Image (cartoon, rainbow, N blue to C red; front, top):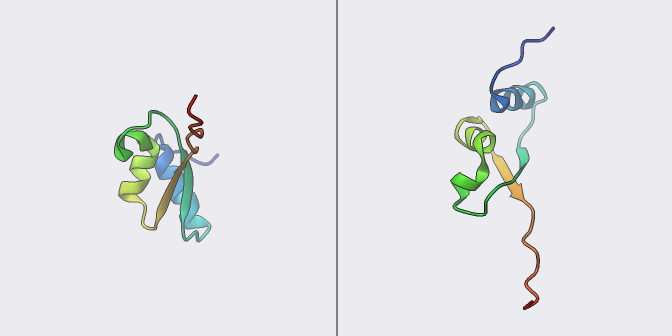
Length: 67
């Protein structure tokens, strides 16, 4: 059995290293506020500690049709 870290960000970084990734891409969810708050705990950990670039994407806001 493979030991698993209590921190998902650590597991993502380990998997990225094992697979020789050049970039981590992940989706964000939550409130649409300032980026560090909106990124979430795992995304913030990756942005702070990953040894390679991290791209955080979020769902586009619905178009404003003046309704």
